[in-house]
Image 1 (cartoon, rainbow, N blue to C red):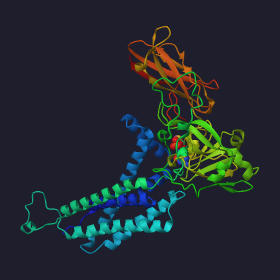
Image 2: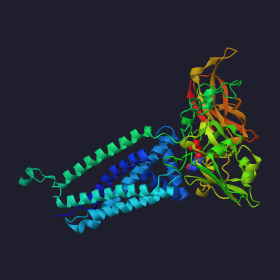
Image 3: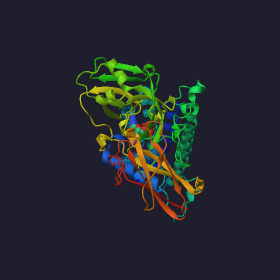
Length: 547
Ligand SMILES: Nc1nc2c(c(=O)[nH]1)N[C@H]1C(S)=C(S)[C@@H](COP(=O)(O)O)O[C@H]1N2
Ligand SMILES: [Mo]
């Protein structure tokens, strides 16, 4: 009788990996145990060469934009998670195939012990990976190791049990083969066994995944620590008017919100799921070339005089007109206020800021001393940072892209020279200064109105942004006409985007609008098209409408 081979092994390995993933998901939700499929994916993303990772991200974003799948950051995270699961099932298939191939000569003897050891070995690797990508607040190692050895060992035992069962059963009969007389009783052939196995694994998978999804609501975000205090659970912007509420220029209807609601703010980072940090036990370690290494608790940081800033944050990967940009009100402490407490040594030139997810960047001490807007921020829009946006602490540095601004920071080390940050080491721009860009959000044909002279005008509007340099001029061109000045709305602060508006005298037909701007230092936006890598996208945006 022929023994089940690697192809059957791959099928069984993958089938059994699905309930394995689902069970681990449920236990992760309930107890915070690691979820190895995502851990392995994150480790891969951090260790693969930068160009490989960047190429992968670029293609992913291409597909999202091509198929118009929705907000780039949300869809990309979902796609990463799906890919992580597919890789995990693929690994289960590869191990199953290898095991069945090696055990082919074993006849009907029991192989369960050996496959259990194989599963446990996979569990051990998963445990080591979880330890490498783990952040503060990760569960204790011993129970974690036991759990992973147990559940992966069970995968291995089920693999061996299935193999032994298949080895004892008749191979699937050929399609044209008439059933043998003895089979008329209850005949369990290999195909039927595999179908049953598939059904059973599907049930456990659905049950585990469903349980995990239900558990979501019972494990509140660490950041939602203000639950008892209803006033502070309301965002600042819902309790206060914006500082430019009386601005002369109103946004054209259809322009994006001037202040981005935090739940809608884009999220970009190297984690399949954001790190979970316990704010009560968390401390910021300040060490390196200092007189007095110090640990600051969140409470200590909040006892320093705070500063509030309206800030537009943009990702260097934001494509022209893309959605990886947002504005909110940041609250924190100026980094330079901490420096006297630790006493920098004369050799110190830079601060290396590192995060619980392994991300890091450097800020020059000269910048931190000269610019009190460089801050350690603990609140967005009047509430503690959410887990996705860096709870409990993130850094802000004016005029540079998000890649220079670590979230979830846990250590600041004074060092004696510049170093490459996480993305700089992966071949992105050293400086990553924000480029000057302008975007058309709306040509509000439906909102056409009659002006004082009785002419119909169409409100056209959008944003212009140049980091901390501000915007001094925005111009619009219709078809091949002359560039005409748009009106600028007074911004929320010198660190935010500027909303612009141009009331266009309506003309019927098809028209193309182009926008360009000049930053606050008099430098015009670069009109030549450049891709996002390595220094941020440039080029002019156009919008064509039929009137
Ligand atoms: N620890 C950590 N900080 C990080 C990142 C990261 O991957 N890990 N990504 C950076 C990048 S590339 C950007 S654009 C901003 C995005 O911040 P947001 O997700 O709060 O919008 O976070 C930055 N800080
Ligand atoms: Mo970014």
